[in-house]
Length: 214
Ligand code: NHR
Ligand code: GAR
Image (cartoon, rainbow, N blue to C red; front, top):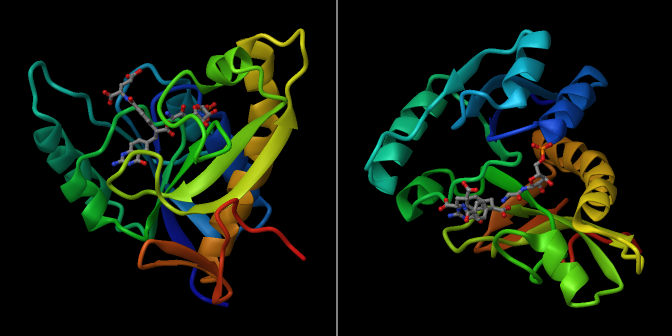
């Protein structure tokens, strides 16, 4: 068994995905969350981290600060934890190319849509407005282009006629909490890799809709 994978989780808000990963680590994910970093001082996820006795940091954007400057401070904070994996869990700031380049193949995100559909924000409402029958969530490696990195795993949920964005988001969240810890586990066991902008599980190329067992 390889040594436990050191994970840093970046958040901006509630941190329910952080919680799912913390719970998964208790159940032996082979990963250890060594730090939680928020760009918002009042993020509830920071309180979750305290309950689990995990070190936290806030890196708050300064007035008029350039994105690149902020990202340099964020990277300095991350380096304190010497992570093997960086997990974006509801982290709401776009990251600069240099920052992403530094952590290429070592940073994953969970995005609330069936990528490549609905990159960016407000995904639940957009899926409802488009009268889609299905929606979902995608875990992907982070590359400089927003929400465009190779997909590792997706989960689908139905959209019902009476749904509003809030209830649909709840349905999506439930799936997120199931798939994100699994992907962290794959990475921490050394089973998951990104090479030339493509994702591989156990050496096999993962298709555009994420891993799907035969
Ligand atoms: N950075 C890069 N380079 N690539 C990705 O794929 C990234 C990323 C940073 C964050 C998460 C993402 C998502 O899953 C993510 C993926 C924030 C925005 C955004 O527009 C868009 C996508 C994501 C996160 N943020 C605004 C900004 O100007 C601020 C919005 C706010 O504060 O509410 O940074 O969807
Ligand atoms: C999640 O649904 C995640 O997919 C989404 O924010 C939520 C965070 O919830 N991420 C984004 O929209 C990124 N732009 P959480 O804070 O409870 O984990």
